[in-house]
Image (cartoon, rainbow, N blue to C red; front, top):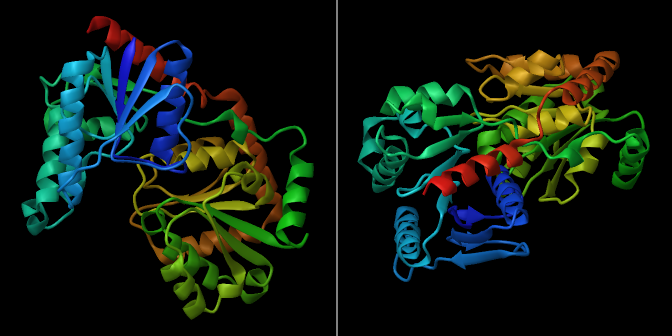
Length: 375
């Protein structure tokens, strides 16, 4: 089969982008021809992928570039005769949509009326409607069960068009038999003392993932706990504003911004707690990645996968409406209880052995093939 995949931007460290690579790569491994349409591609191109980078000549705005991608995809569909077009962002004309983002219509209800007048809003709303309208016919791959009701309420989408997938966890996140040795090696390489606690954040978007909240929680730790605690922030976003915040809070020496990394599994094994106080999060794949690695989790209930933390008893979840004092208290209590940290870590590993957290690419590829056969 000849398959087209579309996404606004590819970079190696985004959650949506990693899911795309795994699903499209499996389709390639099954013998299908893979074409990718995008506005930007960073990093190596996988073998067998034909990547078409759309470069608008005159469009400077975000929404103008998206329209250029849409036009290019429509033209390609006329000439290339694809068996199916799969979108990882919302676009008109898709056969399958991978719903990595939450319902825009539901989020819009929280914004002021002026926001609705912007060209960016009109485009987002129109693109989402093109995917979820009752007669659109787009099959939707869902990873956040809580979002299904939002889309149905906003658009009247038939329930049978939604296909709930398992979480997109890569098995390389699972704690290996020699996890203790790897943990010791990472801490030695990183200069972490044996009696220090490492709080880890993994985020590609520092603002929405709550790095500011994390810094405030660190600064609120009792002095004796803070003196033995370090925060490592892994991700490729702009760290400068948060470095200034850490400096203002007097904790700059306890915070390390590591940039984007290819060795995330080492951090998961070497740290003592994953902190993910997100403002908004459709799923929060990193929560499950931490759990199966044996890393206790402290997160907010806004994350779609936060229920797994509670179900597994693998950490704690701060309820909504969010209160910074609650996060501060939970972080201090968790770091002061090494026995509970160990128990939470063990519970996460056990949960990963009994739950289906790993078969998302296979089930997504199965559905894409089913849709392509019908076209």
